Image 1 (cartoon, rainbow, N blue to C red):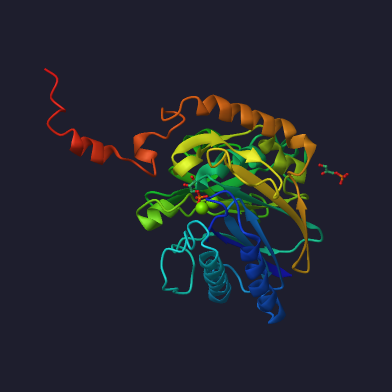
Image 2: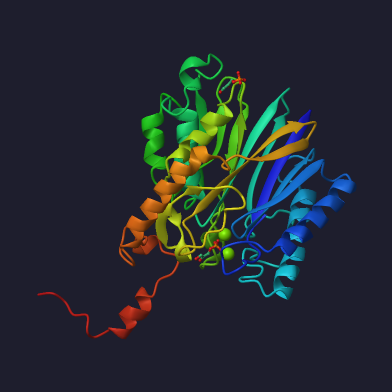
Length: 365
Ligand code: 13P
Ligand code: 13P
Ligand code: MG
Ligand code: MG
């Protein structure tokens, strides 16, 4: 059967500060989703959160960018914002950049990852959700999962994956895209992927079947808003098993923490720490950045799960390493490379300081 999986997320208010979500907000989202399931709009849903980001995971048969599904998400975010406002949560309605909904939440603040698939006999999927980081954070893990044989041995020893994967890469600043093939174009590909603040992997495709393997949200909140309102806190859907990488190959990149942009005030580099949902509460210096992984089997569109995949002692070392990296980076305080370079910072007082020091800043001879 043809099935659409939509993951739509927004930060509609933090509890306390930016570190977590209030249970009443999740309960409100559940209520809306349950009503949509009862009405037949959705086949199934799962509501969760990563840090202060509310995540709506939905299955239906209406295709990608469907007005009804996007409106349902938008209305759910608005209803949850009302709850957040009543509780005076921090940054209530933070990611909702406009009050005029026009059929699609794209460009309005929420992050969106959607894929239409033909559900396989066993459809194993992993949904990654991150907090305190930006959309390019998936570049390194997606490269490892779909192009690095030292991560994914299936690329070497599984005949149905040996033909490789194609990467759709977006230039989020110039609004351009390019398709590049692994393995033969990996050196070209890495020129882009290594610059995650500018280029982000939007989707990955199995080259022989052309089937979609992964899709991520690439919306850049600061570019939509033209000012700092919060970080993108992206999501990514990955199909697993069969002619896609195994679940363990998909999780493997997170066994060694990647350093990403985000963390305090969206203006720092920090380690991406894999945790259970319960531990996705970025408290220390509003971090370090978190990632959770919800695993599901799809059955006729029903979301069988979630299995909280990072709730496993096998990721204890990654968490320890992330804490060690956090200690080292934090020692630098406001210095680069812990603090982002000037042009990447979400906040800056540079113009004010320059104005104040006007006249004192004099030419060198
Ligand atoms: P099973 O034999 O348990 O299905 O495992 C196969 C596999 O893909 C392991 O990565
Ligand atoms: P969020 O994007 O998760 O709201 O974080 C914002 C921030 O500034 C944290 O310090
Ligand atoms: Mg927030
Ligand atoms: Mg957040």
